[in-house]
Image (cartoon, rainbow, N blue to C red):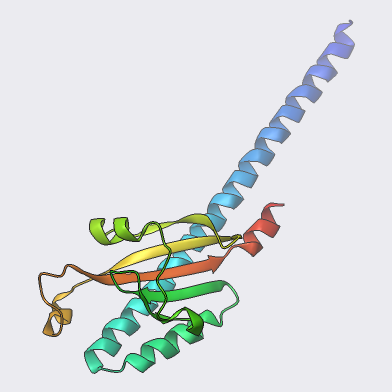
Length: 170
């Protein structure tokens, strides 16, 4: 093959490879950014719930926590928000029908024992979601009612709807 044909073919091949690599890098970057947004949203919602929980427990206004969870649950991107006892019993939830049931979160024992937050993409009840479970630590302000020996009082569960991410990635 003549050099006049080889050079343009080589340039076209290099440009094609660069386009594929750049496109892949762009998709990876967009996906990573979307994941970061889900994590930040879950952390923010978790923080709001924890703040409401602390305030409402100290003032004895437990009904306010339930109202806050219901308001949070009305957000189109939040699938569910719940407060769990160490036993897994759901004591407050954005979904009223869940209260009194036992959570089926596989990560709950690890969250409670290790006192660390677990988060990630999961399939729950056939739906792809971003799920975060955080421990509720027994802070000094909690110890007016709770024994100091009880290190973890329960957990906060936040589940975000990821259908917008799924549509974006298609």
